[in-house]
Length: 112
Image 1 (cartoon, rainbow, N blue to C red):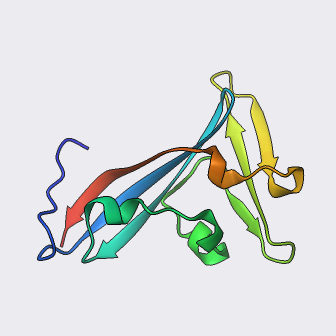
Image 2: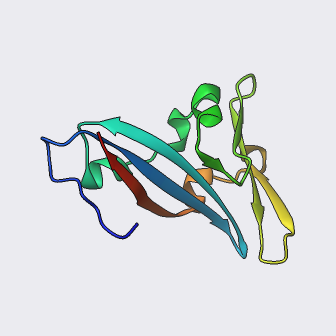
């Protein structure tokens, strides 16, 4: 993103938020859109436990195959390294996916 044009509470637009997960050399990314009267730091409050199946299906980027098993209340991600090798991480292995988040950023903005 070259510029961030949101000016405050008078602007309404759609922001695209990117979340990057990392475990060692393995990384993955999701991104989602947030619309309405919000901007700046308010957009960067990410809580993986609020994502349900519908929200995951609406992600504009899901290169880590983030999924949620509703029956078992289990999140899973598939991370990749530079060589294309994969690492499957899920909460069954006592991995806290929230602690794997290494970056949250606004990657796009469209003023409406």
